Length: 413
Image (cartoon, rainbow, N blue to C red; front, top):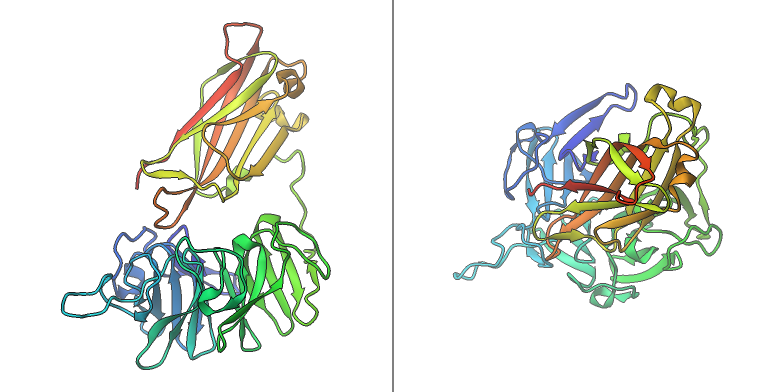
């Protein structure tokens, strides 16, 4: 498995459920063309894997390259891509911009995110370039573009080859000699014929939703997997696995038996599994009674911004009394996920009394998970979570603020 945020390739024994690391050091690689023993070479955001024979190909999204891991030798190296973020077809490896002596530039990708193969060709979903690429695995291998536009050239258009428009495709799966594409930001599944380069819509309305049946809708579908006649879709923003009948296109949401939401009074919270989480414990906060608000502010590194197209999630939980008494009075929790947020984020309490009842003090836990990207839209976007905890005292004092201000700083890389 590609353990993206840990920058590792992991191996899972499905019988014993034992996990081991087979590539990477656990630190993020800063270079581009490093090769060597797999456990000694740092990786950078491996996104997807594809096995062909005894070679494991890796979509290395961070440096915009395809890598390969020779399983028998336990050696890892760059397979394709100069590291330049672009749509460049041609030789697998070469200088980013060519040389004065006529040496052509090497191929270039833009956040490769999914892989598939028929044994002769490696197909790549090149997400930031909004295209599907193909790399021949035989002698004289080269990179070519099968369908789609380019960096900042995206849309939702069926057609042939370069006239096709996709929007951040994140998933690929082979079926009947063709490729199914998770056209993520278009909320569709599309079908590509690699031979003719034709792409056409297969399932999904093109608008976010979770409708089952003969006219299904999805909400940013990501990963894909195919069995004989079924397509399984990781429907990311619906937090669901969807199943598409490949013959009829009829879609249903997969029920998972025994999977239940957390009990309302359990003390464990979602921040325990929040990505890249940082805990911040604050001293006692004083809050004026009446209408109130939480104000979340995050200082991003210079040259970064919140991704307006990515869902950002914030939540707060209010519990009365000490930790060992919390079970007697279940915490009140509210959460929301939305796009287009700008900093600072203001979350209103309709009234402090609505939250605390007759109590004048409470324990506040607030979480903010967000996606941030470079202003020039190069490189991989990143995800971060801040979890703030603070005791709060409610007072009838007009000189006290009616806001609890929570701040965090994301360090520069």
